[in-house]
Length: 287
Length: 227
Image 1 (tube, each protein chain N blue to C red):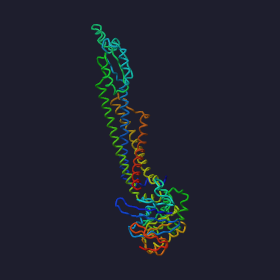
Image 2 (cartoon, helix red, strand yellow):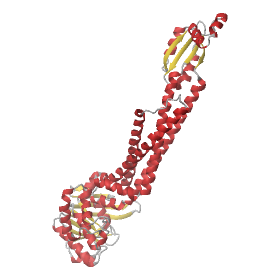
Image 3 (tube, chains in turn brown, green):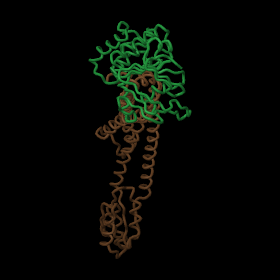
C-alpha cells in the first residue's frame, strides 16, 4: 500500500498542472453543489411553512349537501384536512376582525356562505385541488391565494431546478477532468506499466496508484469545499435573516453537517469513478 | 514446454501474414535459438507466447495448457511463469539495479522478506552483485542487459524468452549475455532466444529454429545459422 500511495503522490507532483486544475474544478463543483443543496433545504423549509399556512376555502351555495361535499373533498388523496365552517361561524370570525360586520348582518342578513376549509399535503397541489373542488355541485367559488402561492412555488422550483442542472453539468465536467488527469498520469507511466504487465502485474496492481490519486483528489476537494461552505453559508444566512426575518433560514449544525459529510463522500466517489473509467479504458486498449 | 499447433498469425490492420502454419515443440530445459531476417516473424512468435497477440488460426500451448484458456487475471499468472528480456532492456531509470530486479517481485506480490535473498541470487547469476546500487545510466549496455536478465529470472520462471537480447551490444558484451543465458539454462530453465546474431549462434551451438516470411523452414537440433 505504501508503494501505491507513494506512486500516487509522485504522479500528482509530476502532473501538477492537470492535478491542480482538476482539484480546482472539483472544489468549485462541490462548493456549488453544497450551496444548491442548502438552498434546496431552505426552499423546502419555506414551502413547508407555506403549506402549513395555505388553506383552500370553498364557498357553498345555500342548500348544498354539506355532508356529501365534505366526504367528496376528503376522498381527494392530496387533501389532508377538511373542516366545514357554517355561515354563523364565518360571521363570528369576520366580526372579530371587522366589528361592523355583525352590525351589517343584523341590518341586511348574514352575507357569508357556508364554507369548506381544507389543507393539502403539498402546496404545489393547491391549484389542482382548488380546480377540482370548484367543479363539485354546490360549490360557488374557491379561494386559495393563487396570486402568491403559484408564484412562490414556481420561482422556488425554478431556482432549485436550475441549481441542480448546473451542478449536474459541473459534475460531468469534473468527471472528464479527472479522466484527463489520470490519462496524463498513465501516459507518463506508460513504460513502467509496460514493464509491469510483462512481469505479470495484475490490473488491480497497475490501477492502484491511479485510484488512490482519484480518491485523494476527491477527498481534498471535498475537504476544501466543506471548509469554505460552512462559514460562508452561516455568514450569508445571518445576513438574509437580518434582511428578511420571516424566512425560516436553516442555521442549525444538525442539518448542515450531513451536507458537508455528503460533499466529502461525493468528492471521493467522483474521484474514484473518474479514475476507474480512465484506467479501465486504458488497460483495455493495452490488452 | 512450448507447443505450436498449426499456428498462423495475421495482423488485421495491415493484412500481413506474420506466421504461417507453424508446428513445433520445445521441451522442458531446452536452449533454443529462433533465427531469421528482420520481418521473418521472430517477434510475432515471442508475442504469441506471452499472449500479447492471439493466433488467427491454430493453438499455442505452454506446459500443455492452451493460451486461449488464459483470460483476464490468468494472463498475469501466465506472464509470471515467463521471464522476458528485450533488445531495449526496459529498465526503470529512477531505480538502481537491485530495485529494478526487486520490482519484478513487488509487482507479483512476493513477500518483502524474500526480496533480499532472491535479488542477491539473481544478480549473482548475472555477475553483477557488486553493482547492485548503480542506476541504469551508470551501467554499460551489456550490464544493463544483464540486470534485465536478472529481473526476468528473479521470479524463478520455468521459461525465459529473450528477443534480440544482444541487438544493441558489442561482440564482447553479446558473448557475456549469451553466457549468462546459458547459465540460466543450466539451472533447468527453458530458454528461447530470438536473434539474428549469426556469430553467436555459430559459437554457442544449440537447437536452432529458422523462420522465413513467417514459415518455419528449418529445425536444426545441432544448431548453426542457415538462411
